[in-house]
Length: 303
Image (cartoon, rainbow, N blue to C red; front, side):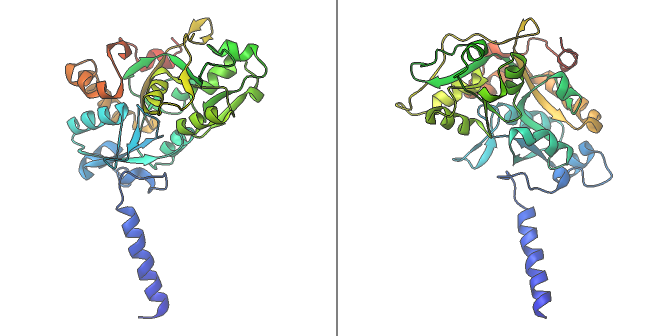
């Protein structure tokens, strides 16, 4: 065997090892996640393979890597596991990416479902096919202890030109800030929730805006003496004359509408059951976060 042939063989073996990895720590996985690589539909291919890849953005309690168990978990991930198993897909592999890269990654077939608690919004509905939501929740601010700039709403940030608001790239909070007319110079964009928390600690931002569940989870995991607290009281932003409440769901490619419909049918049988409530309780979800009949169609139409 020549030196060149040896190198080619070594390269092929290395690629084979990489292709076999699951619960990926990045978004460099093969297009289609192994489920949509053939001419079969994504759903048919996933059933044949017995597995599918989901995209997530490492934001507890929705989807994150559990380092102790060495697997991706969270409210969105665990519900997906149950629903997909009922559909004949027994294995879920996680592909980690930044929140702002989730929709591009789905379109590029790095994975076949976004399972990250993504809010359903009219603009996102133009890019993906959403399932019906699994939860509804309000907003919150993470601030330094004592809330030195007295920030209890997006409007408080707007009124104080010295205040900096932290948001995660691609998250809905950036859109809220824009609609409330907070100047771009007052908004600090972070790659993920952990970076935003560190940014508030370091003084790069005076508040980190996220879902109330995200802030609750961060505070629950933050050691005493971190110098951080949840802003209390807090008032949700008023957008187009209405106080906002976000509804999170799964997202599929628009040409996978049949897959989304089949997933939705199974999801409807599960949400609100005792099994569902027991499954999501460890992640901080209660009956107060149930979607209460709100559908993707309503949210996509701006209702």
